Amino acid sequence: MNIVMRAARDCAGTVGSAYVAFSLYRLLAWPGHDFIVAAPEKYLGLTAIGIFVLLACAYSAAGWMKRGRWREQANASASLNKERGNVLFLILIAVSLFAALSYAVTRMGRTPGSTIEDEKAKLSQAQIDVYMAQINQGTNRLKLINKCKTIDYTPPADQGAEDKTCHMFHPYGGGVAYRDFGLDACALQGIDLTALAIGESACGVVYAGTSGGNRLYTTAADQGQISWNNGTGNWTVTGTTSTSDGLANTNTLVALADVGAPYNAANACRALGAEWYLPSQAELNVLYTNRAAIGGFNLSGSFPAGRYWSSSENGSIGARSQRFSDGNQNANAKSHGLSVRCVRR
Image (cartoon, rainbow, N blue to C red; front, top):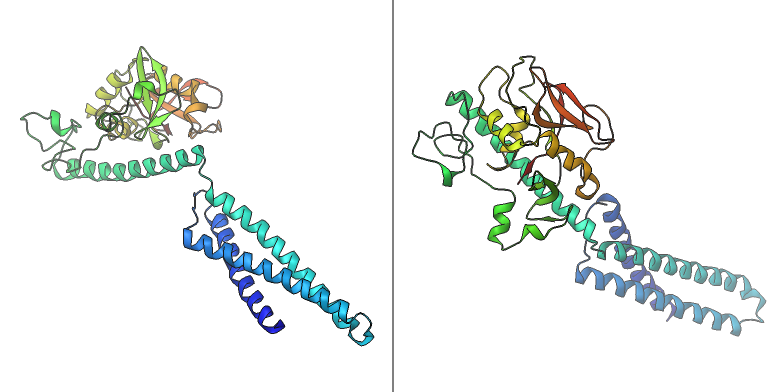
């Protein structure tokens, strides 16, 4: 009987230990993910650990009974002491397994709203990154093959009868499939974005606040560190001096074909859709004011990542920027690769 109990105990303990060890490994290897334990896996692990504990307790009781029967047999005392030590050791293992299992199941079963929103943000940003790569390929095609001096980002539904060879979103042009990240997708789903509070998100956009009477929406993460112009020392005055209308500034920048073009920061925002743009100085300040609620900004204060571009020009050499650690506004050389966060109305 002892041999059978030992074998069953050891088998159940092995399965339970493997289950807990693997669960903890997943938590350590992928701490940012919400792992939900599959039902068969959970039931197998819990059953194995439960059987192990029951057998350990039964084996312990049997050992104590055996000790009582052989109390007066001096030649067996050493063996019983050893057996008691083994049983206590098994009980300690069982307790440890239960503690580890409780931690693993609790962590893997949790679905906090912040974690879910983080995962959604990561997914949305990953989609945007892929789309940006397609936009870059389309840009190269338009400039190198079609020899376009300016690129038209008009959505297919708004394109006229003109030549399409320089349209980003047309088969004869850049050949990129048009995607709208945000408001149009929400409208199709019947989602009312005007009901969002600052920092709340839906359809891949985050409500950022108001500027000039307009509701501003932004992405869940930065577009990266991008130069304001083409990254060279070819300075020119673009005339995008508005500190309140980033949409007008961006429309001008993406249409220019001067020595400073392409204007990378503005183009990176416009690539998200015809309504997306690089915020003006005032609009950028709205993002800064509500940075904690919006999230995802670089608050280190370091240069250049801790500074964000606006679309407001400050002369032939520089454009206005803002440091998100303390709100400091300044001008930086257009060739610097500052952080970029796009907005739309």
